[in-house]
Length: 201
Image (cartoon, rainbow, N blue to C red):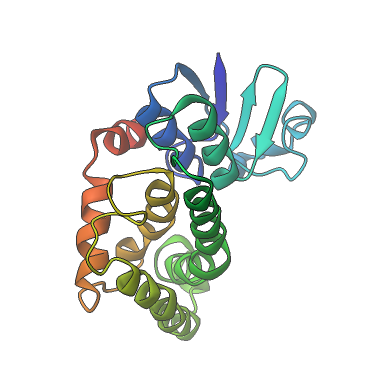
């Protein structure tokens, strides 16, 4: 059985969401990185970076949440995987884009507005990060013109990967009202029953 290390209050929720979407049996091995559980010798053999999530599928060990999702969709979720090589390229593009363009400003805003103890929060840094987030969110808004999903006709792994990064934005106080297509698309993604099941894992 597949094992997904981490919990729903971490980046592991991305992989739990994917597992729920594709319906593959899995075990969620709760691993609390804040308590040092990701730094044990046993866990470091699975992910030497000492981060969650990590995946164990037989002899295969993988880390990096969106890479795990690409693997799971490719192997177990044909309904979420694109039918053409061109669209595979777009899936890789959007997944890498989510990590390189979108995640840092969203997470920096979230950490400094919500996660850090109040005395350690940097309001100016949070505000600047929220401003930086506007550019990639604007690109997403343009991309969604005339389509419901990133690759057009149906929800797929590209939508899941990008939405699993962006869904922290409202929690961070990043207002999506100026990008109504993004707002509606994110609502459609996160209204999926699999996402609710992942959060409850």
